[in-house]
Image 1 (spheres, rainbow, N blue to C red):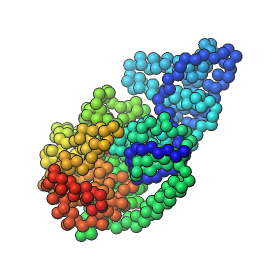
Image 2 (cartoon, rainbow, N blue to C red):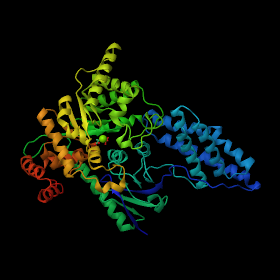
Image 3 (cartoon, protein in one colour):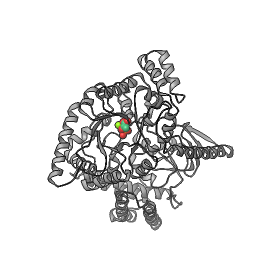
Image 4 (tube, helix red, strand yellow):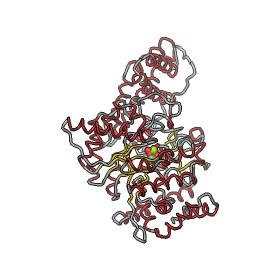
Length: 576
Ligand code: PEP
Ligand code: MG
């Protein structure tokens, strides 16, 4: 029978595929023993589960494309090695034989013993490796529970259902060719959702109870635009969605005609449409869609799904590939924005914060951890010798951070000179305005920096005091809130006064509904995931700037009045 659940769509797309429930975390297993005569059967069950887990992981490894970063393969290799280790593959068998434990129980007892050993380690990195053990134990557990039923280890074309996904998981899933994903938690501005959008994977977040309601293998439809998940759809519904998929492919093809035309309004006002990139594949998309630049390169993804922080050479290599791949298109490399929901495996410096979004994140973390930051700055500077690079600082909240960063940059330049390594003498330095304090002091930041970029994902989060990953408060997430619009206007005005460029690289910039408003507010640089570039250009080319300018000034001036709000809502619902 057809079942519909609602959630929050993070893309416009539609996906059709079979459900695959992702088992996360370990299942609590009840103590259970077996009869003496069943021991050989239990040992066989355990061996088969270990073999199946190995086969499944090797399958994933084989399907990873050659262009993928080697650490993703290393990550899987580590887990394969652990599966071969006697601590996981043999010790539980000895418990089955000597203590008559059921296979699941024997595995759990051994997991507890290993957790005890890890918890006594003094090195925090080694202590955190219990996560790898749990991952591998979870794999064996999963196959024990399936008990011989065939496992879907080719996830391509499947729709993943999970309680939650970290950005790092999303990257791995992408390499397995999944058709879409659905999570119980998370907000549309979480980094997981942003990644899904950038990867073009239809996704829904905030589908409560999804892992309980849905069954493995069940046919599903994700209608991301309308926030709907349809299970077991009947034939007419399926036909309807197949038709929509065809239509959207046609529309996407039609947009390709806009690749080589300029981003200019009907009355000749020019804007720059730039790309937000995170993964190597985004570089090709940026170039083929003729973006005017990269307005945001999120460097933190290089640090995910691995156990060691990439060294300067590896970072340089990644930034070099981006700069060379862009073949002259200017790139804005953002310094590491780790922390909050952008956590990385074992190598996350700093302790656990009780409120990570307000804690040691982004520039705060980097300034506190020079060992992490110095090689990062050197690597970016070295990439600047190969093409037009600018550096951007995330999450600024006071000028002291800019000054400290400038001093570190100077130090990095001097050390590169000493080492005989090349870098450009012309690397503009900009800052992200994503904390209300920075927006309120935009003039001061504009005096110290060469450009500003408004990060609305965080600016909305911090202005309205709502956690961007918490779906319980998602209904309050509103980029059109008068306070948010006032702050955005202050930043644009500060840039104009100081004659420095102001861009926007939050998701708002790529949302066609807001482009007329932002253009009218004076924004000229929009940075968005590559998949949104052509639609943004289509909207922009349909606008009349002079008319918008007058209308938007009136709205912003009277933003607290109901009439202005009505005008604003109308403007944002009709492509201008
Ligand atoms: C933002 O906050 O708007 C932004 C672009 O940065 P991120 O989403 O990576 O935090
Ligand atoms: Mg941000």
